[in-house]
Length: 477
Figure 1 (cartoon, rainbow, N blue to C red):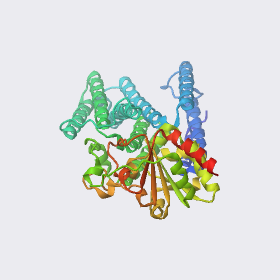
Figure 2 (spheres, one colour):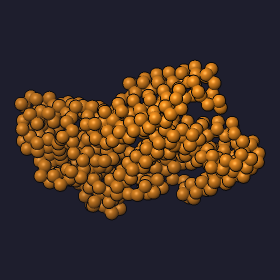
Figure 3 (cartoon, rainbow, N blue to C red):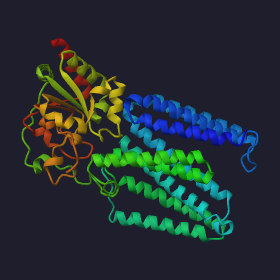
Figure 4 (cartoon, helix red, strand yellow):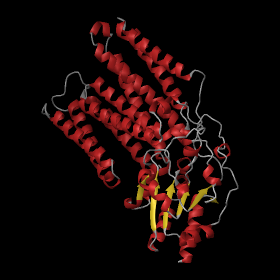
């Protein structure tokens, strides 16, 4: 192999990764972005394998006899990945993303430990910078791994969404960071290889505990931010592994993922009118699920409705906006909802979808669900685009959403979500909320919208309700 071939191939792969991120920024180019990213990764894997075991491979790298081990690992990993991707439902996508983040963190930890086991003490080799790369890679990787596992359990419902707030939790976090820093210092200064390895293992144990504590202390309502934050962590862990392995492409790829995840976390925090520090350390959702409507003095009788009444209301409306939430995703009602909006549009009515940035359990979750159902991108509007139009809308259908349409965010200074930008659906002529019950949303906060005079409650499973609603609309056509 020509010595320049890996460098050229890595440049091409890096360029494809950048184009992939650019493509993923828009729904209509997302498929192309995925294809470009896949091609870039295939190039990276092929060239790396050739550089390791092909002609002219460096003498300190693994021998060709290990090529079979690599091939087997790639085959097993590819088969498992394909199986998971084909079987995971769209509602489980946030859980899958959290698991994938944990894999990246675990890989960084293992690379760091193995690199340390094969080397010597920093005091003898003089490789202080390299030792720092190992320590930082292991620290970030372990936090990513354990934090992602906790996030997966929260998203899956195995662990409750309410935050675990230990006394003096922030001091505990600082103490763990200080302990890890002390161990890293000893690792750099010691002349004993065994002591250095033990220190690195100690850093790993502390970082694992820190990751668990950080994510366990974050409430369920903040999970979209947590997912994007862990995405950023996984990128920096991969970049650290790239430094350990002297692999430029891994450094570039990790930096791209880390930076994009950090930017996405910032965007999500802006959408919630909160800082990233408040999300990580604020313990949002720790309060008992208080009826915000009662505190705000807005409680009143619930106006329950029926499918025929909602069908009649939609039939007489000129403009309709649908607000999807995670409840719609769980019920897998997106296809029936799309058929309803298609039927309304066929009658000449103005129909749109309104998406809140933190709807669902993953950034962009609702957009993906609607795209899967075949909803046109042109009628899917973001919160900032549609809020000014809600006052001129006849009917808003809120399907499985709760926290993102909660007026307590504007009306109740005592509410945990006060100040968070929300979809101002209450400004419409009529609001129809499809919910199983009056139970609080995922953030554990009651919604006074349910008690407003212009709100009608249609209780029941979302898919059953919208299926019956579709049949009623078709029968009235």
